[in-house]
Length: 343
Image (cartoon, rainbow, N blue to C red; front, side, top):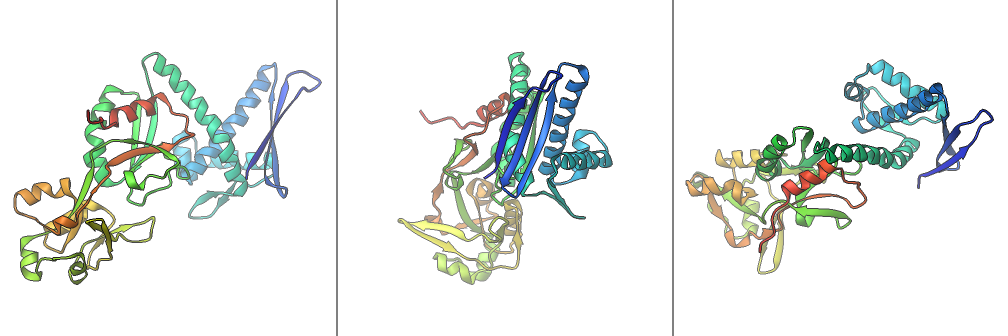
C-alpha cells in the first residue's frame, strides 16, 4: 500500500518547508520538498513544484507525452524535461517509457494514488466557486457503449450542453466494461446488473430487453430456432467484449431457467450497431436491444424469434466511485441524465 508522509519544518530564514515522503516499500522511497516562504521567489518555487506534479499527472493519465503536451499547451520536449527534473529531485523513476507507450512505475502509481484526490479536490472547489456565480464549468469524461451513448445519453446531453456552455462532456464509446478508476473516467454507464456493488449508481433509462432477430429471407433458408440449443446450428452475429477477450455469450431465460449460448458465425463486431446492420443484411441471427430492433420488426425487415426466452434487465445506470468528490458540473450532468422514478 502506498504511504505518503507530510512533515512541515521552519528553516532559519523563515517560511515553511513541506516534505512529502513517498514510499510503497522500504526499498522504494523518495522525497519532494516544497518551500513555502515569505518572498516572491519562494512562492514561485512552490508553484513550480506543483506545476511539475500537474505535468506528471497529465502524462500518466494520457499515457503519452504527445497527448499530455497538447493538453497542457507545451512542447513535448519541454514536458519530457520537466518530468526528468521531477524524477531527479525525487530520486525515483515515476514513468516507464518505451517507443510505443508510457506507463507509471510502482512508485508512480503510489504518487498518483495519493496526490490525485487533492488536485481533484482543488479543481472541484474552483468549479464550485464558478457554480456559485451561476457558471458551472469543467470537463466530465464518461465511458459507455455506443448504443447507450446514442440512444440513452445523447438525447438528454444535447440539450444539457446548450444549457451549460461552460461544461464540456467527453464520451468514449467502449463495450469493454472499462475500469473507470484506473482509466480515470469520471463515470461509466452500464446495465444495472453490471455495476459493481461498491459504486454509486443512478438509473438513467428504462429497463432493457434484448431480443433475437433475423430477416425473413434468412429464416426461410435456415429455419427458425425453436429453443436456445437450436442457435448453435445457426449463423449468429457475434459481439466481442474486449474486457473478457471473448465473444459475448447470449443470455437467455425462461421460467427462472438461465441459459448462456456460445454462438458461432462468420462475422464478429465490437459494436452493437454493426451487429444490427449485419442482421438487416441477412447475414445471420442477432441478439440486440429491443428498442433498437423495434422499427425494423414493425416494418417487416426483421423477425423476432424465441420471444419467451428474452428477459427484461435493469436499465442503464451511470455509476462512479463512492469516494469521488463530485464537481458541480458532474452533479448537474447526473441530474440531467437521471431517469424519473415511477409514481
